[in-house]
Structures are given as structure tokens and as C-alpha cells.
Image (tube, rainbow, N blue to C red; front, side):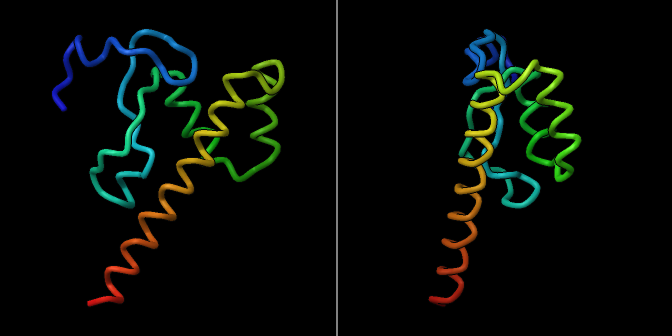
Length: 102
């Protein structure tokens, strides 16, 4: 999609900030360019990836503490991460089924 003001002025799914970018719920690195997207502001987009890629509980705790606890924003992002994982599993399983039917 061409980056224009018109397609950037859409509210963030998490915090309703009015300027957003497309976030692919199924990682492009793993699944290629896909249309399973939501709108996130730059801050929520970065936060999504920071949290999803953190395996160290101490680092996750630092993020939560920096927000003053489990805010609605962090809760919504955690829900999106869970949804993203389910979407990726479905795409992977669908592809595996297609390969096994050939």
C-alpha cells in the first residue's frame, strides 16, 4: 500500500492515536507479505514487538513497571500477541495440510 496521509490517519487499535501504520499479524519474515493486518501507532507497534520478542521475564517486568503496571494498553497488546500467535499457527497448519494433500 502506498504511504499517504489518507491511509495513515486512522486510529490505533490499541490507544486510538490518530496516526498509524499497518502491522502484519502474521510476521512477514516468516509468512511473506500478507493482508492480515491491523492499524497501530508507532509506539504501540514498537511495544508489540518488544513484548512479543522478550523471552526474559525480568525484561518483561521492566516494561510493565515502566508503564506503572498492567495498563489497558499493555493488556490489549498482550491480547494482540496471543491472537497473532493463533493466526500464525493457523497459516502454518493450513500450509502443512495443503502440502500433505499434494
